[in-house]
Amino acid sequence: MLSIFKSIPTHMDYKGQKLAEQIFQGIILISAVIGFIYGLVVEQFGWTVYIVLAGFAVSCVLTLPPWPMYRKNPLSWQPVVPETSGESSQKPQESLKKKKHK
Image (cartoon, rainbow, N blue to C red; front, side, top):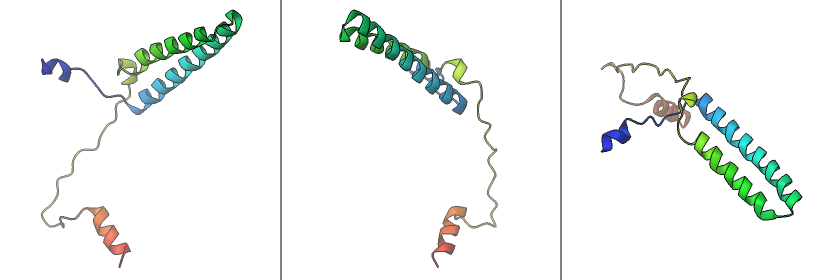
């Protein structure tokens, strides 16, 4: 049962995150404008709220799952560099901190 969930991709690259954010904001903005205009015409504020909530639901379905369109630009990580035995066991950041505070 758990292997089914492990096979589902859960990552999204940075450009995909930007695209998802733009889609989310665009749908919310369009639904807010349409909802406001429709609510003004029929003189019912409830319809404005319903249309904005429907836009929110649509934008959540389109942007929250990591669809393949959000995973087109994966990051290429640098390979792990093995540590030689002659070096100290301190991280470079720790040695810099000690030098600054002398």
